[in-house]
Length: 112
Image (cartoon, rainbow, N blue to C red; front, top):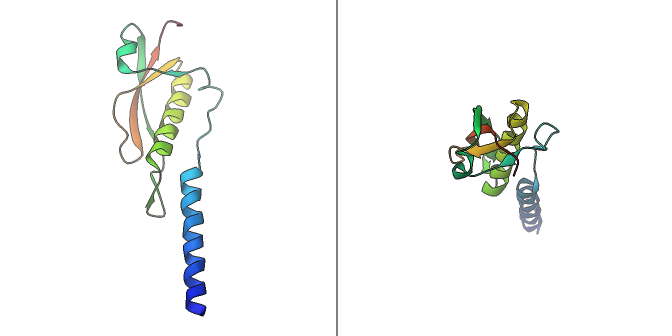
């Protein structure tokens, strides 16, 4: 009886931890990134390149992989924040996310 209760508690705790990992967004959009847009590479051909930024976020917590979509959204938010600090108004992915890391180009583009 005690063993079943212990297993049940572990399963419930594991489910709660999993839900926490999938629901957490640790990166807020700050004031420098709030006006920065995300464009595909094809849409920055007529923009002035300011540079590039490599952003990273946790892709695992305690050895458990976080949701790929959450990680991707955090990387975009980090890129927008850094792009704004560099004086850009657009960021564009130059690589795919890999192990919580991604490279973005920072641009000044005409207002659409």
